[in-house]
Each structure stands twice: as structure tokens, then as C-alpha cells.
Image (cartoon, rainbow, N blue to C red; front, side, top):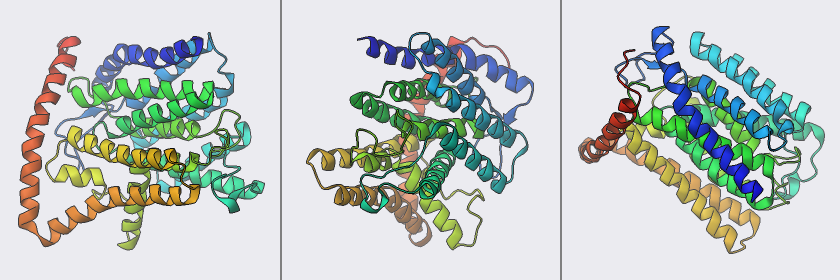
Length: 392
């Protein structure tokens, strides 16, 4: 009972704090011109505040301090310090823009600090026979690879309103349930804090115009580190099998992060194939393809979350019937690739080779988006009127 109350506090405190804090920061951002304006890769027609990461970091710190009054969260102190460091680097990137190689080095430094300072890392993949009892050097390299992969997968997913925060809520709920089931209280609390923060941010990001705020690199890096820590165990020893040596944990992590991971892999491979820098932004992400078809951001976000849920459902079904771990891992990976890559290639093929069919697809998407826009407009009236009609 006590633990359930702890989880409830971790979820509710951010949900209470976000509406109290975020509107004031957004108004300050507009007055000080801390905003993101329209650009060649953006469909926005007005400047939007870049305060999401700042509000997220503030709420995370306050929530952690409050919960620490009831439950010892001191093992998370190094995590919060590294998270704050990444937040500062992300804030610099939002303000002045950093070279992609410099950003990669900063991310690598954060992952290695956690590995050597708090023992967060990949030490044993129970699901893969030849990756058991790894040497320290192999463990360090795999930790670095997994950390950079997760951080950049989250960063790349922050391309339309609500997508990164919605996928963050999905990851937090599923991983929170996983840790709760295995009795890892500290990790579960961290996951539910992530759910509360991302849920509060989602509503202002999607359903508000007056107090709309972008997550920015400062927010996406914080969320990425949140997820990286969430897939580490409570004893600070592995990224994977230490969930009571659960052989299905690796495929579980891949299924939960499937949209982020497989879209990142496809985008990077596509850019390299066309001799472009992997970090050079374009509109080749699946969420951009959906939006270019006529979907609004909420519709594209909902569709991608449903795709992610399909992959998680496949993982659940294959694990529930007791399938052998390696075939199960293959099925989960194949399902993720099929569900996330196939829509992209079908849409791009129609756009380039069958323009009439593509036009019909765009028309249908636009018709559905008009209906979804009514829901968004209703949400904007409710949230914006709730906080009055103060001028920016």
C-alpha cells in the first residue's frame, strides 16, 4: 500500500506542478524572445517558446526532492546531476546551435559518467549467449553505443507536436509496470515521474496556442536520459538481463522504443545512402511524411503511438506463450521494421511514382485531420481560457 502511494505521488506531483509553472515560463520566453520561429523545415507560422526543457528539469528536481522525504532516492543523485548537465548542453544547442560532433561527444561523456560513476551500463545480455559475462571494455563500448542510440532516437523523434512526449508516456508506463512487477521501486518511481512530466507537457504542447512550448534539445536530452536510466536495473549493473535475469527484457526494451529506434535507423541509413550527413536535418522522418500527407500533428502522433503499441503487443503475445528467446527477439525486431519502415516506403513510392493515388491519400488524410482539428481547438479553448487572456 505504501509503495502504491509512492507511485501515485510520483505521477501526480508533476501533473500538478506543470500547469502551475509552464505558463509563466512561456510568457517570460516570449517577452525575452527565447522562441523558435518559422523555418524551411517547419510548418509553424508563429514563434513558439523553447521552455519545455527548463520546465521539465525544474519539475523533475522538485518532484525528486519531495519524494525523497518519504523514500530514499539518493541513488538517483548522480543521475539528476548528469541530467542537469545534459540539460545545460541542450539549452546551449537551442540558443546558439552546436556542431553535431560536439553534441555527440557531450552525450558520450554523460553516458560514460553514469557508467563509471554509478555503474549504469551493459554488463550481461542474458538473451544472447555470446554476450554473457562480457569483459569490462566490451561492456563499456556497448554501454556507450546503447546510451547514444537511445539519446539520439529520442532527439530525432521530437519533430512534431506531442510525439516525443507521447512516446515518453508510453515508455514510462510500460517500463514502470515492468519495474513494479519485478519490485524495483527506485526505477518504478523514476518511470512514473517521467509519465507525469510528459503528460503535463503533452497537453500544453498539443492543446494550447497561447502557452505552447517546444521541448527543444534541452528537453529531448533529459527525456532520453530518463529512458536510458529506466532500462537500467535497480542495482546499477546492467541495461538488460538484471530484471531478475528475465530473458525477454532485451526484446521488451526494443518493442517499447520501436518507433524511436527503427525510424532513427532508417533515417540514418537513408541519409548515408544519399551521401548526406546523418545529423543534417530533413523531412524524411516517418512523422514528417505523415504530416506532409495532410495529417495534423495529433493524428500523426496517435498513429505512431498505435504502431508502437502493435509492436509491444507482439512482444507480449510471444513472451506470454513462452517462445524461445532468440526467435522471439527476431519476431519483435521484424515486426518493428515491418510496421515502421513499410508505411514510409509505400507513401514515398506513391508520392514519386503514383501521384494521383498519393493525391487521394492526402485528400482523405486532410478530411480526417479537419475532424481532429476540432478536438484540438476545443482543448485550446479550455486550456487557454483557464489561464486567462494575458498578452504575450
